Amino acid sequence: GNSVTQMEGPVTLSEEAFLTINCTYTATGYPSLFWYVQYPGEGLQLLLKATKADDKGSNKGFEATYRKETTSFHLEKGSVQVSDSAVYFCALSTNAGKSTFGDGTTLTVKP
Amino acid sequence: KAGVTQTPRYLIKTRGQQVTLSCSPISGHRSVSWYQQTPGQGLQFLFEYFSETQRNKGNFPGRFSGRQFSNSRSEMNVSTLELGDSALYLCASSLEAGTDTQYFGPGTRLTVL
Image (cartoon, rainbow over all chains, first blue to last red):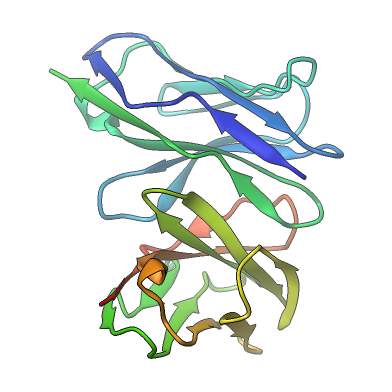
């Protein structure tokens, strides 16, 4: 079956530090890949997505590139802020409709 | 455009009872998916409905069921509640099924005593 493996957390960074959260996947076919973010007490929000190989998704300074050869979709941000503190989920979905999520990575950014 | 709404937001039940959760998708969205989120198991897929039909089902016992109405609103039912059913239940809607982006509601926090 399909699976998503995320870098284990929690991750603690100082403000303005560089962020990388690793995500790798296994899937049949050609999935779409997503990063979602969950702030305390809220549901998940789409952060960015990519639908085919070599696509780069970007939003709010975050980026991730769909790498088919390494089956990866790592999330990066050049300079994190305190307001980026949240739980980040990597996910994939296929035309069959069933979405698969990683376990989530908790990010804490300290001033 | 209003987002995905879920009711109730919080619920406390006792073991053996049953519960029904409701989800109203974004207007025009035809696909609704349900997830269970717990600290130990993460986010687990329950089922997906599209045009009133269940398209996919996760690995949950038959105590978990759902349905979708003609206006795309969806309900999820859990019968004979167990302590382990305590979780945040998230509903997500999308325009179409498959690889479309999902938009999540705030969730229903269920506590089973």
